[in-house]
Image (cartoon, rainbow, N blue to C red; front, side):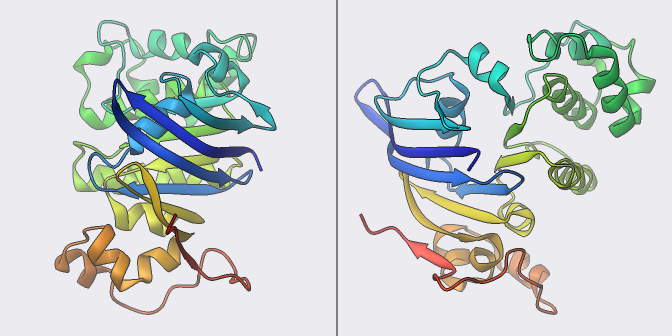
Length: 265
């Protein structure tokens, strides 16, 4: 398993944001983290990335305990993050933003080759390589945020609300990109407000509620469960009708264990 989170607790002052979180990702998996606003999804991503320091618990990346490591060391181990709100450098050009992403020691020496890969994935960035990043559209800035993360040569990439603020057509394009990156071999941890899309993509999913794992299972099983759709995921009737149609083949073959696990601890 490339990532293992074990009994993770995080506090902001006296307020507990994460309470005994345990989850994992196999190499090459796409794992979705879903839940209501304030459930602890972004706090989990920030703690794995080394931005927040947990009070208790372990985070193992390829067997190494990285809990509490500073974020630059976490990044250099191969964990990349596409942060909520994109957080690009608006006064720098597209090319300069990408070069910043390649400053990690693990990525040095491969800047030109990686930039070529990014421009192949996002041709619009190549067209705008000399343009100030702050003058681009929201969709183009999200492409740049993903491209900058890829410049660091990550093995695990974490997306925090990547579709936030994007037009529907761009959301479809974004999820196609995430799917392609995962199929290329990258392990993906996806925190996303668009529950239907994220669970359709995911091999496995976890539902967070008040800082705890409430449910876990295959993405397809969670998506198909009526109780999950209404009680936990908040999918509207319109979205539910849009998902109706022929049964989809599960993204993971069923095992002898239940498809959905309820955490009652």
